[in-house]
Every structure is written in C-alpha cells, then in structure tokens.
Image 1: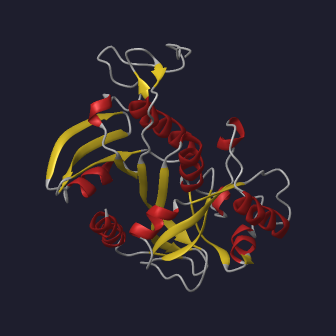
Image 2: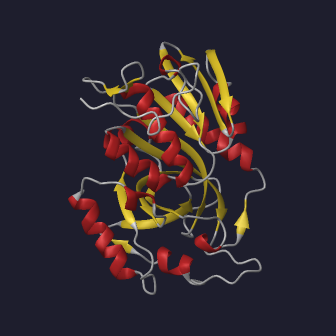
Length: 287
C-alpha cells in the first residue's frame, strides 16, 4: 500500500486532522452536519451527555450520546468548497491510519445527516415545511474534480433536467440521490424533492439586489421541471456535494431542509429558529 503524503493529508502536531482539529477517536459513526457553527450547541443541547467540544475556524464539533447511541454534530460553514474539506477529513478520521498514513483494510461507512435551511420554489411547500432531499442537483463545480461512479437512474433524471433547462450551457450540473436506508429511517413521512445546490446565495439562486442576474428566470425554469413525479423543490448550498462525496467515499447521506423562505411568494419566515428546531428534533428522534 502506498503512503499518503504529508502534503495530501495534513496532520497537526497533536495528531488531529488539519482543519477539523479532531483526533480519530473524537468522531462518532453517526454525524449530523450543520452549516452555522452556532447551530452545533442547538443540536447537542438535546444530547443526554456531551463528551467532547472542539473547534477551529468555522468547524465546531460536539460529540456525545443520546441513550446508548454515540453521535457527533459538526459545522461545515457554507458551500460545497467547505463540504470538500469536511467530508474528506471526516472520512480520513475513520478510514486512514494516521500512524502509517495508509488506508485501513476494513473501511467504516458513516451516516451523514445534514440539517440545514433552504428556500422552496414550489407554491405547495409553505414556509415551515421540513423537507428531505431525494436528490441533490449540483450547479457548482466540485464533482468535476473527482472520479465518480455513475448512477444509471440518476443519470437518466439528470439528462431530463438538462433537456428541460434552457440557456445554461456554461453550467454542467451533477445529480446524486440520498441514502435509501437513511431516507426510510428518518424521513418516510416528510415532503421530498430534488434540492438544487447553488455555488452562491444571490444570483446563483436567482436573487437580484444590485448586480444583475444572468438567469433572471432561474426559479421559474427549475420549478417547472417534473419527470415521473420527480420535481425540483428547493435551493441551498451543500446537499449535492454532500450526496456525491458521500457516495464516492462509501458513506450514507441524507439532507433535511427547514424551509424558511418561499421564493415564489417572496416571503421569509418570521420565526426561523422555531422551524430549525423542529427539524433538529425530528432527526434526533429518529436516530
């Protein structure tokens, strides 16, 4: 087995991984990811016991127990560029021997559950909906840099989406599905749909403030897609990267979205924290 170089996998002097500042034993096999570092204690306050609190930059981790189940909650920050950092380092903590710098013979598959916020683009999804992403549709470039294992069903759906969209020739989207087992465990009764992962918050999600958006009809185009019951329901900034990297690395992933905005009704929640807390409690009750 070849060694992973010091520049490819950076380990801090204390033996922790570079960005997350975690030791291998600090991480549970069930991991909840949140974008906002301040949301980490909003999740861990429901733990029966917290055994570890660590942080570096925007990456905060709490590990503890609910009953006999050990789990970690990790903040990723915003965007798939941060997902690239966090998911590679989570995988390394479990599947690379830091002493030998070699991949372990027996690999560990993590359960990775995102709890995040999002805006709906369908009129029948009101503010306050808790939605599970059946798929992540990436408008970012992250997966252009990885060799991916094709998913035949997802490719058929992606081709239908590409044919539906017009004027997006410069964008090469990718599509990946959620873990079927996590969907069944956590979200069988929730609203479901294809979640668009955008590479920004403003024009990449069809917003206009002062700078003119190149695709002013983005929301209408995405919202009008429907193929065999699959439709595009919401926009955010991490899900597609989470799903695709998790699949590439052999982990299970699910994204749960607290709908705080209606993009078609141009409205935002007056009580966003209440909605986010409902999403947190929903996930923790089913883990």
